[in-house]
Amino acid sequence: MNFTELYNILNQNISSNKDLKSIWFDTIEPLSKQFPNVTWENLLNYDFSLEVNEVNKWLDQFFEELPESEKIIYLSIAQYWSDEQKRAFYSLSVKTYPNFIPEDENWPGEPSFLPQNPYCVPDSINIILDQFYNSKLEDVSLIDYIIPLCYVSMLLKNYKSKLSHKTLILIAGYEEGDFLLI
Image 1 (cartoon, rainbow, N blue to C red):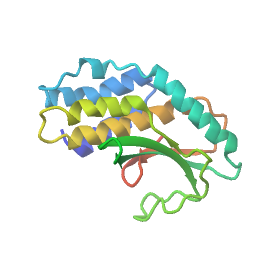
Image 2: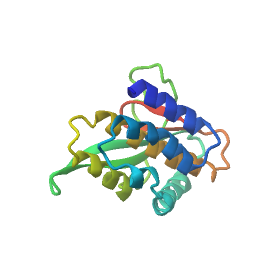
Image 3: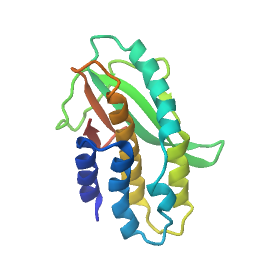
Image 4: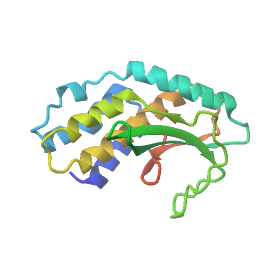
């Protein structure tokens, strides 16, 4: 299994009518076969319900501030280094863009709107990925690619059901990299 194959599996799962638990399981489960030396049971059955509520509250604030003219919403995930904690961690950010041109190598460019609180640092994605960083796996790049992308895509797909704005373009992905239309 490679990056493209996992991306396609995730894209297919996100585009489906599956619930979040099924999207997560069906996207992550192929990794458990590729990396059998890792304990997958807790990860495959992870309960995101508390975290979904936390992220939904944060997104509620964003949408309360959102000007009506903004139509392209990007929920991104990026990895940052904490000098204080001496470790890397993932953070979510939300912003809007004036246009959507995915074939433009410079897209997304500069955001057109940033909310007062553009960042959220959820616990679970960092706890989940710490399991792999602390494992004896030599290369966690495939895991480190698909798990955050799946996570951020699931969160936005879940939130989409709350929106009455049918004209929005919702995008989830890496701060500078792969993304999915939700």
